[in-house]
Image (cartoon, rainbow, N blue to C red; front, side, top):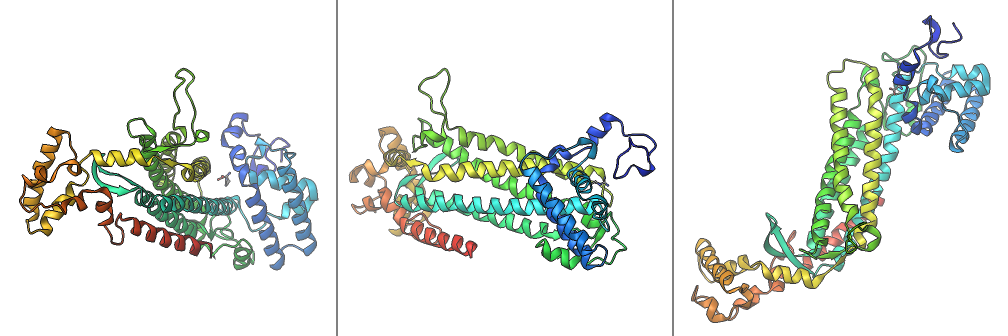
Length: 465
Ligand code: ARG
């Protein structure tokens, strides 16, 4: 073999790789972040090869020691990554051989980079999903805290962003909690399908060595070895699934972001975000901008894009491994980083938001938000719902003309629209009466919010168990 060809696969080559092609095809700049998983996978593989009689115990121990030293060098920033060695796998293997000699060259027995890389990504993703799951839980924990605190706080509820009916702020926050519970479930599902072990598939067809896949599977804490070697080395559906779950999570975070942005505006003035989560303007001295929710809203674009990249990457790929697959990493890694960053920002910020109760209340009083309550009142007094709707519509039109909300009208004013209206109407026209009356599971009544918080706490406690 010529000195100038690649050490690991240069045997059949007559000239070195073109310098640009070497850089163009290399992945080490972005796949080195999987060094821990690569080392862990190699240690498990070496142990299994020893049990299978392929490596001696001495060889195994040398490999484990060498990999341990490499890990420390990487963590201290002393490891020299080489683009000529293409990827994290060959960089570590070459360093091992340099360290322990010929034994290092035996590590790759019964293995290919194809099953190695698929194993590394799954291990990496599994660890990251665990972090994401705990950040979702932390954000939900924060939501439970403020939902409980704000169980009695009244704000306008909206449809079409027009005042619809009064709701409690705690109820609104518990809607966010529900969205996040489903996101949690999606990441759990994704973890389950990612947690299958490709190792042993080798290049594509399996290997002739007497490998024991159950042993590596147990050492690496996978739930099972992949059933089919061709599938194991080639599919990246778990990465697509992760990006899909991430996109839905981000979509939820953008909805929350949008509301936070609206609520902090002077026009709504429902909440205050502490200064530490906001930034100012270099020209307008009065400005305090809700940058964190705005940025989270913007970052959704990246994650949706990564989902599209990965779907397109995998589309029409014939079995088994293709070099295309190397392109799975950057979108996946960036999706992971983005999701973690957004969750961290939200989990820190959300519990710190302060409600402006007076201004929420005033807004709820302004938009005829108890109109449905008046209609329900008429129905309870025997008026058919459609007629009640019409009567209340006329009352609202009168209110708009007189600049009066329903609760601000006198009994005489209200009674001109229906003679069944009597003094007890004011019980339902108050905001408190309106929310308290929606007292069933899933309703906005303060007692229901408190009950939902208790159920939420139980749910989170079960996750820890
Ligand atoms: N760097 C490659 C990747 O990320 C590793 C597997 C390469 N296998 C191969 N036969 N070229 O996908």
